[in-house]
Length: 99
Image 1 (cartoon, rainbow, N blue to C red):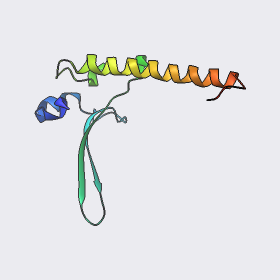
Image 2 (image 1 turned 120 degrees about the vertical axis):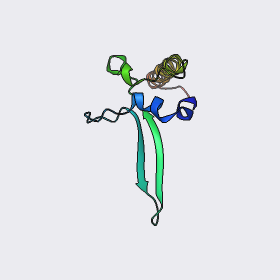
Image 3 (image 1 turned 180 degrees about the horizontal axis):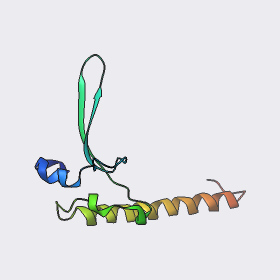
Image 4 (image 1 turned 60 degrees about the vertical axis):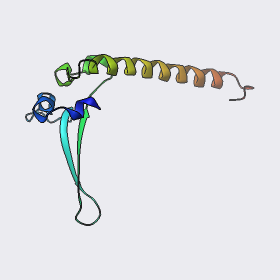
């Protein structure tokens, strides 16, 4: 959340490149809700997996702990998903198990 409190010029350093057809980076999203109400949001979209597809130029360096915190979270997330896959595969290989 600290990232979104930074000044706009700092956030724009990792903005979605104008020449890019992708969605990765910082940007604003506008949409029309019910009636004529305009809904505005800012977002930071990052590709995290597979690791070789990460564009580190679009990963903020401010706040300083951002990259390490996101990398740590992704690491735990990947481990959790592998554990879930293991549990499911074991449960399918045990016909009499209660899953």
